[in-house]
Image 1 (cartoon, one colour):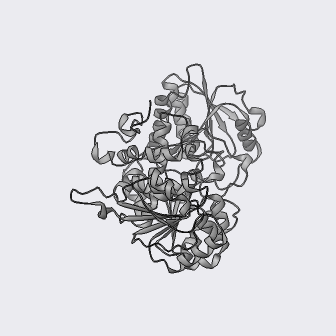
Image 2 (cartoon, rainbow, N blue to C red; image 1 turned 90 degrees about the vertical axis):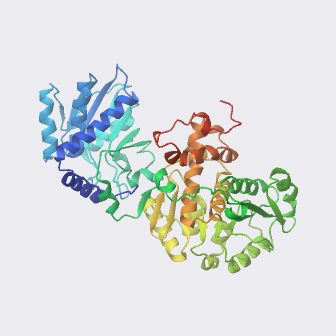
Image 3 (cartoon, rainbow, N blue to C red; image 1 turned 180 degrees about the horizontal axis):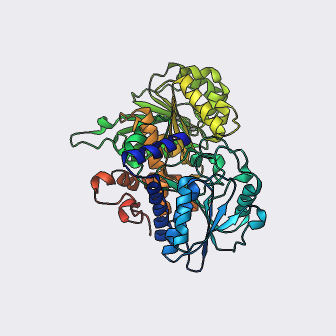
Length: 526
């Protein structure tokens, strides 16, 4: 799914109106209807609660007015407020405003802070003040109103975008942005929703399909993509009847040091679990018994006693992952540098491999289009330097990827795979993944897919998607606090089942029931 900027969204609205031969007011009604249906079906408003809908003067406000009418018709207790931050009103706002009188809905006017209503604990606020066309921070009494919202212990539902949040540039005034509990976003997510610096403004978002023209959206040029199930499925390779273990590649996991063998073990197990044909681990001698005992499926080569020093493996492999538990001892750094300078195989670099790169920038020259880096925020900062905001971070990562022709997986709530000038934001996962060891598993998954013949970009995107999906499946039944890195591996069968569900169960809604036994680990106790 493409992620569009404000001007592209406006162009898409206009093109949809033209192609479908409808009026703009009809598209607004469609959007408001989708919002109403979500509120009504999810039962987020209790019978005794009042819905306070705050409307601006433009089309976002028009959406709010139409929503107020639809809610009132279904006997919801609705109060409507017009926030007069301007003398200009859009035509569709005026049309929907006039329609309210037919239904005996009489909005309150807000011209200053003196007009602010008393809002009770437990009421619901609908924010329809500013939409995607906002170009500067709200100020004056409008900012004060937003600040009032943010002090209240109420559910805030934002229509399309929280007021004050600029969708494709840094926030100008953080005190002038609505902290929305949920955003009902039309058709596609906005880039701002996916950035960690905006987490307080977008606690959750829901995508509502309002029928914008998909062909026109696909024709738009944007570097930003929101990774969805159907897109990944198009590149997914189903196993063939006459295939064998050699068909699915041979991966090597290099890493480990005294006291840190678990990371290599988890990565190796994950590589196997995503379908890799063979896995060889290259570890210090101190980890030999651990690996052979805990993962009998894997083959093992050893280096020095307590840490890697020589990196002189003998096995012929299709791709390598280096870094989990590696350490940064002097001889390890020297051995890794020698290895990297002569390596010609596809490569996944994680953890201490990244820290060594940060210490030895001269090694950047050996990165190439077959290299995937998987930094968490701290590792990323050591590689590219500090950034002032998330947008600058994305630009710096893009430049790094361009300079060294590599794929960079920036881990986070919406992990983004950056390949040259393209950004692929992940749509799965949750806070259950915020635990040490999750990255080791992801590294194993990426290299396990890489040796099966997937491109570095696709292998990274698919691994990230499945990795996050295991957490979604798990937390449908359990609390996120109890999710372990090894649970990612255990719940991969359910994640793969969900990935192929569109093909295997064409009559099944994409929003599948993760409580169903086919998605759960066979050893999981419900």
